Length: 117
Image (cartoon, rainbow, N blue to C red):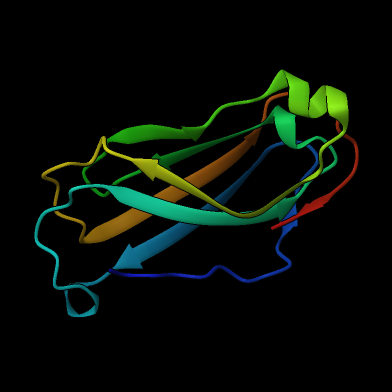
């Protein structure tokens, strides 16, 4: 297992995307082929239901880790605390290289405040 923690308190822009990039080196990891990928996310945003999260592996495979959720936005939920998301799309891939996780605000005109990750 390999873990990475981004800088806590990273500003999430009210308009646009937040991208976190992790470069996994051979020395950091003894895994040759993945079975799955898991990420743990904590964030605060004015309308968490308007957010989507996508990961991209070093070989270019993309997987949507969470979708926008209309009811979360309507109810005013603002946080995800230690939310674990898993993807099986990376089975058999070599994990070495650059991983990107992008959090996308699907309703940038509605959300005007900053968020935190």
